[in-house]
Image 1 (cartoon, rainbow, N blue to C red):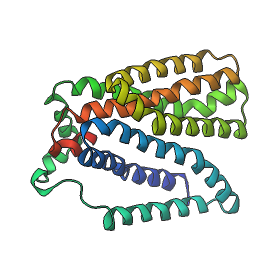
Image 2: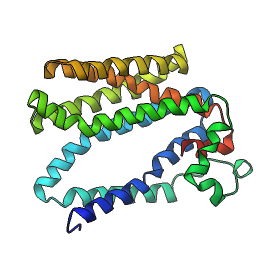
Image 3: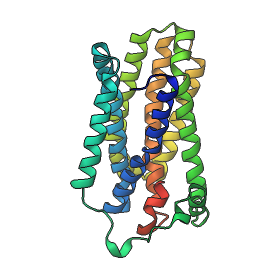
Image 4: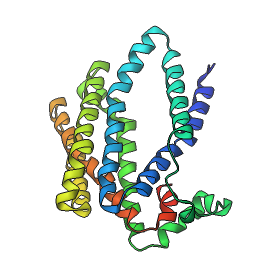
Length: 248
């Protein structure tokens, strides 16, 4: 329905505000699973994102060829369906005796950061998560322009590369995180993921050809182990009544 670019940006802002569902989903996992199984479950969440990342753009392209507005309507319908499923089907994860009374003071995003100072190791782990997410966002923002400028990739090439990212992410986060954490622990998974990510980004910056750039994608998908492992470590630092605040 957006008549101009300003309204489109407004829609993106509202979409960002509603992204709190992701934090809630992670908190739900932390509520219902023991600490040693959370990293694997967080990995499965990442695999679900990878699945959407693989098929979402393809579906959007098909629908967009029918009508440029159609992908937005379908996305809105799917979001509404998800909301109804969460409201009417999924049971509450936290028992009444473990819940904390709602407070606007604690709901303040800046005040919520105090939680990081109240528990040992949270600041360091949160900093790792912040820098990792910052790197990921920067990559997403510049990837298309960079690939087009340096390797003369067209829309098809970019789409295939994104599909490769999605497929590899599903394999790593859906199939590798759980057994790796079970055998080597969350700390080792975190370190291996971060080292692989550093190697992958170095390849991105130095790759003389698009083929070498694709090799970097393989390393950065292993970087995907760092997120679930780090999140699993963080959930061990807080009590059952603080998992929601932590994920936020």
